[in-house]
Amino acid sequence: MAARLPADACVTPILSIRNLSKTYASGHVALKHVDLDIARGELFALLGPNGAGKTTLIGIVCGIVNASGGTVTADGHDIVRDYRAARSKIGLVPQELSTDSFETVWSTVRFSRGLYGKPRDDAHLERVLRELSLWDKRDAKIMTLSGGMKRRVLIAKALAHEPSILFLDEPTAGVDVELRRDMWAMVRRLRESGVTVILTTHYIEEAEQMADRIGVIARGELLLVEQKDALMRKLGKKQLTLTLQEPLDAVPDAFAEWPLELADGGQALVYTFDAQAERTGIAGLLRRLAEHGIDFKDLHSRESSLEEIFVELVQGHR
Ligand SMILES: Nc1ncnc2c1ncn2[C@@H]1O[C@H](COP(=O)(O)OP(=O)(O)OP(=O)(O)O)[C@@H](O)[C@H]1O
Image (tube, rainbow, N blue to C red; front, side, top):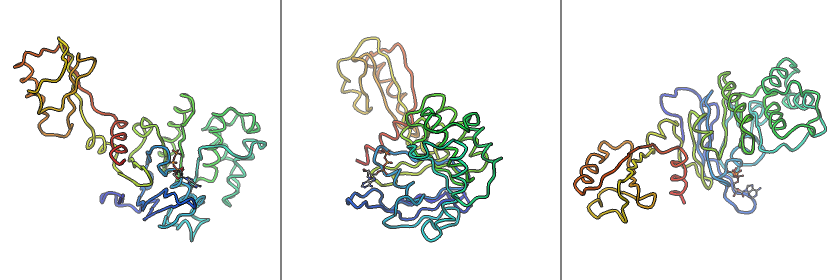
């Protein structure tokens, strides 16, 4: 699907992905013709179930995986023809910490910066380590750190060369509440400082709390890209639950025009409707209930969460 920026976003995208495809040597098609533009300074969340193609997409943009077709431009640089320049614009926080176990935190981040040919800037590295509460650990060997601290080191490494685009692949998978909160705060600060952040996540809550725009990917296809608020408005459903005075065995035929369901062993009647519809049908439903002598003692309504929207989208795709 096409996922260009809205016309009013009159900016050159910082990341431009065109017709990107990937078929692994095994024959598995991991990405199918993905088009996506990311605006400078945006916080974009890529949501998808396991195996959707999120890591493959990031891997291609970061030059770790070769694309089978399509192009990617990062801050004006083609990621194949102009690999070094493109890569120097990008920071990647991968899912796993794989190397550097015997190195200290300080030498690891300094080395990361040097990899991109950036001049030494100890003041910058100190700022990064302090922000991530790693400054006190700068002389510790990475192998001696806790899992949470190792995660922080991954982020420090990714920020060492001052990238303008930061990818976070499942940043909070398996981390504790405190680290998750710190990560969210850090991502917000980065974004305020002008860094474009693209994160992948299974945690809908993360996308709901953080993102400006959300892309949903499943089986290698970008199903949808929307401003978060518009997505919730467009696809959100509302649910009205009536707690009945007397339980019902079944929904009476007279109510066939409303998609009603019984819940709580017949104690509650649940009506799901489109939050955007001009006529919700609630007034008519309540009248009909009164006509049939069905009394209720309580009623409440709620809007669907992003999680419900997401599950419906992905299931619909299957
Ligand atoms: N090197 C590889 N060779 C063959 N198939 C692969 C390879 N790497 C990934 N795949 C397959 O491609 C699909 C997409 O994988 P990918 O890791 O991009 O998904 P993901 O959305 O990041 O999933 P997760 O959330 O589980 O990390 C999966 O079915 C995976 O098994």
